[in-house]
Image 1 (cartoon, rainbow over the protein chains, first blue to last red):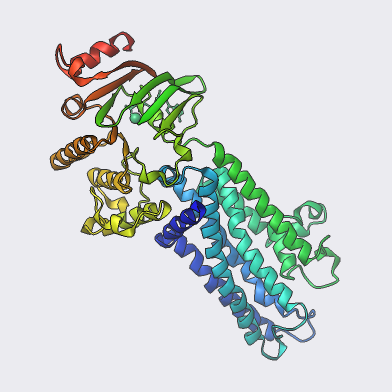
Image 2: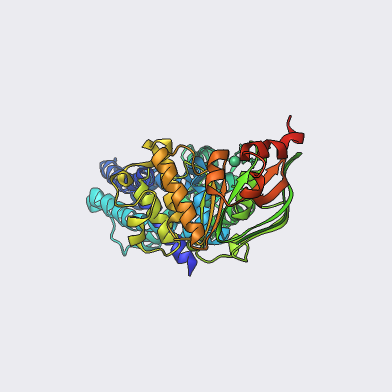
Length: 254
Length: 233
Ligand SMILES: Nc1ncnc2c1ncn2[C@@H]1O[C@H](COP(=O)(O)OP(=O)(O)OP(=O)(O)O)[C@@H](O)[C@H]1O
Ligand SMILES: [Mg+2]
């Protein structure tokens, strides 16, 4: 099947560039490192503060680490346009859908491998740092949050790939994607007037999936959907971005 | 064999290619001539499925290029001198091309132009001179041992050894019954290497004939100017 051949070619491309490898490796380091830091500072927090959510330090760092996945995914297609390798790529795999599927599969598998190390690593680092305040893997809500975090980190790859394929440029794609992923950290999505719309942005969905949207019961942080609906929303975002990318790529002259 | 029928491409108000038809037959080197902006590269890119024609069709080996399975095994193409990622080594550039079309890795090591075992192949393509980049592009075109070659100004940047090597290679390919379609601005080179020439001007076909016929009354250069004279700006 030529999608398999296209995916193998894309895997060679990914592993032979410093930029793509260099975008993915920090995901592990930042994700696990920040989990450890956050866990340490929460362990030392005062006992009379707000109730402690042991999942918060585990996954908070992922909201930063995900940027590595986004940059990686954007580079896999953006650098083809930036350096002109899109022409030999489409000479080798002229069926646009096959080329696109091969690229999406190879990039997403690479992101999934990174997520598979990062998410359990971040959880373990945070719980180790929390010490007696930490929880085990089997504690209530933990397995779901781990699966959710893994799916989120992995799905950001095909989502960003689709957006970058629509825009046909590394710079344009990052100029649009990075602000989107910083919105949440800046708390704009908690502004009441904007919340009805912004709560459905991919990064906000990710916060719900990973239980990061603030103390339970605080109406400022409540969202109109739960974690599993959140996973469904992320899948929809990803499917829409991939479809948009395909529509552009299908007709593009190179 | 390459069959082009009524092929046209317009960009807004610019007509790049204006309804041309020709056939490039196997067993010969066919030169593709025309001034800057005549539409040679656009035609080649339409033949290779990179640009969608506004009108008309192009068949390679009897089918639209996009429908060929493992096209690098049938058709080798060179379009831009610098088409490898500057941060990737030449070897890895050839390796991903080979993987995409199920070409054995052994072929990467021995392909003419820039074999993977040559020391230069271990260097990043961004540091290549124009001639080295062109050799890498030729190696990429020859990787699948194709029966059809489509080369856009392949002599650019090659040193005298490279030009002699490429001339011999094109002649050998044609002698083996393969199809060789080469655009060039070097009239002397085309006169030496090609059997046939197709000349376009302003996106229109102005000649499709043998080199022998065109050079009967003088040089190929004279014939070229005669054919394209009425359209000079
Ligand atoms: N993407 C594009 N957008 C707009 N116009 C274009 C585009 N590509 C080519 N053209 C125009 O189409 C015409 C044909 O260009 P083309 O590159 O095919 O010429 P060429 O014969 O290869 O020229 P050269 O000898 O300089 O390589 C030119 O007028 C060019 O400006
Ligand atoms: Mg040209």
